[in-house]
Amino acid sequence: MEAAAAHWWIWPLALFAVSFAIGIVAVLGGIGGGVLFVPIVGGFFPFHLDFVRGAGLVFALAGTLAAGPMLLRNRMASLRLVMPLALAGSVASFAGAVVGLSMSTEVLQTALGATVISIALLIAASKDAYGGTVESDALGAALRMKGDFEDPAAGARVNWRTHRTIAGFGAFGAIGFLGGLFGLGAGFANVPALNLLMAAPLKVAVGSSGLIISVINSSAAWVYIHRGALLPILAVPAILGVMLGSRIGARLLAVTPAATVRRVVVVVMLLAGARALLRGLGLWM
Image: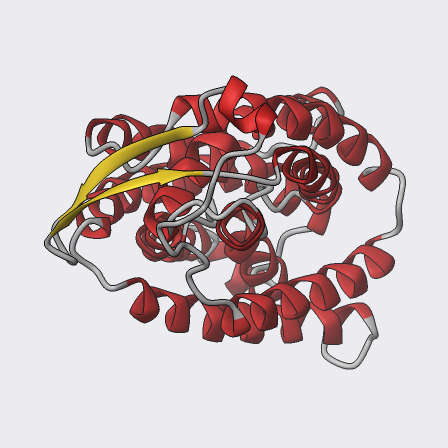
């Protein structure tokens, strides 16, 4: 115990390194980072899950804010798409955070592991739903959920629009609630919802997901801060690492094939989800 206490500084350094790597992958995958941060840090670092979840929300918020300006400049994120959906998710995330802080750690670990594994399998099975022929529904047209961007990887300009807007609002309400509940940053299902449900191109879904996370997390994070579930020794190195990594990830997004990032994210999520599930069931302490 005394030796471990004497080397306490190893954990913040390790947290910075892990957060830096997550920041790169999170922007490329559009997952915000919290979905990787919470199960990885909660499973392999000596911090209580409540503090990890609180840091996870601020972690995801910092990463998306760092990458946001570049994503908007490249037109791989759309405020017209982001703001209505983020409003629905923001209200629900506040409720999820309140419920999550009243649940036991073992139940949350088990539910977290099962959720992360399920989402990893969903992402692995998903394909880019955009085919260029989608017609906007009435609500989507009224909200002007459409745009265009230059895709250097494909060497073409992509014009896009969305549909199933009402279903999209419902999906982001559910995503926000689960994000607040687990402290995942609400980014774990944004990309499938935007791409598979609403038919936004994969890169627009990835870029817009980051901005949605920054709005939704602001609501849920205040609940954890108010309850004292945010430790500076945990949050500071994590935020520094993810902000540096996110800026690199934003630069790589335009030139990296989405399939490559999807495979990396799925593998990491499966490992982290399995670790959280086994800890919750008491099979791996």
